[in-house]
Length: 500
Image (cartoon, rainbow, N blue to C red; front, side, top):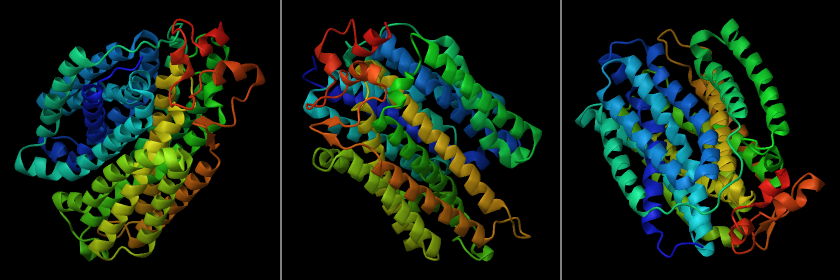
């Protein structure tokens, strides 16, 4: 049964997930400082970002599933401790190699997203689930914005190492509270971790994301890039085959085939491409010297302040979206969020000559991010069996990251494909890049329109396979917002019964 008091639980979940989201963007503006302080090259310094991305992509769905199996609180505490150790190691890192290792350890924190959503589903009262997921999604979205805004002032006033010392303190306190006050979830999946599936999932994710993040350095036509892409295709096919044949799959492919899940994941892929590209290229655009024919020559701190409207809008729209979701439905909010992103990128494509235009675009895109984050999480949680919540929400976060990597890589080709004699991109490169992001966000809105409408709190469309209808449908979210599986004995969930 849901617990009466959930405020401390939510505070712990928000602190952990918010810090992890902040760590995604906090270090990016400080990379030149890190490069200089640790006496390394620019290409080596980029591994500070790449290592974090790859680690998070691998651990997010795997530990989400582990939480479903052995207990979400137990896994949450272990992940929080790991993130704290990773931040401590990064703060003390004497060399770039140690810092990269620390970022790999921090990437384990990607599992905080699916674990947090699962704990909310298991522990919160039915009427609180949707709003709490939206509020947590707002914190996650705003965390990325905090990183962009706070990095400059922290590095200027203190030192880049405080980008990690501050998270150490926050995560340490959150861990202590989690041990004392977060209850262990009663809902458990049956079976064990499919380690072969986990290894293949890790392998194809690395083979896909590594060339996307390093193609600018290695060259798109290099043997390494082409070989890794080919390996990703083969490993992905092997992973699908392994998961389909497993009695205890890491990620139940029947769940991924649910109409509400695959359409939401498609929208996540496309919207993630636009979102991560804006985060990556808009600060660089405003920091470009005006002598290039565009840009404002802004400092890192000033560029962060121009992103402040995005931060505020992300948080507010995420919270408001949770209040609107029972009235408008998550599908409508996801469509609106993607459409706002398209509108923002469309404006940026045409008008980017004044600072207020960039601030306006940042605010509009922030509104879109807040709505999209909240609605995507709610759609996934409302559509999957209780014992698949961690794996399914973890995969949704991963798909968004994959989309972001693809979008950032393609936008980077457009922006830096032709450079001025000074080495700076031409204005047309950014214009073409912003136009591409407009198209991607429009495509995300169209994908969101395909999401089945939920009636009476339950997503229509049902499972794909007739033989699986009862297995998945019985564990779908019912009208009061909780899983039917929670109302039955947790020892034998519908999904596990079907596999048995």
